[in-house]
Amino acid sequence: MYYHVWFKTRQRKWLLLGEVEGAVKRTIRDVATEHDLGLLECETMVDHVHLLLEAADNAALSRAMHLIKGASARRLLDSIPEVRMDAGITHFWQKRYGAKPVEPSALTGVRNYYSDSEETAGKV
Image (cartoon, rainbow, N blue to C red; front, side, top):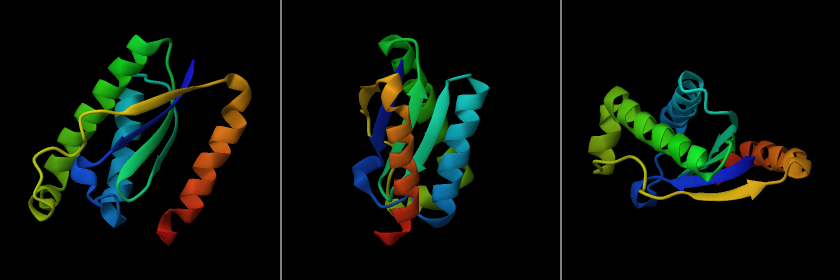
């Protein structure tokens, strides 16, 4: 199954800009590769992330999100400590995430959504 997943930064702070944006994308991709999580797309906006994941079921999706959010938050706060201080946060991501199943026939449209988001991300 495929899932469109989204989650937000803590307190919806605008943290995903510049150097941090690139670090978030790299870190999420690294975690997904290390744990073989089926990440197909990753795109950020200023205060949230969209992912397209392939997972066998809801349990696999839950495990993937636990790994992605947990490992990426630790790595980001360790590698860019000024984010913690400047934003006044102790956790990078909010606790929950949203997810919607994507039919295989809709994958092209969803992937286009990610491409369109990337093109307009800098125009916030």
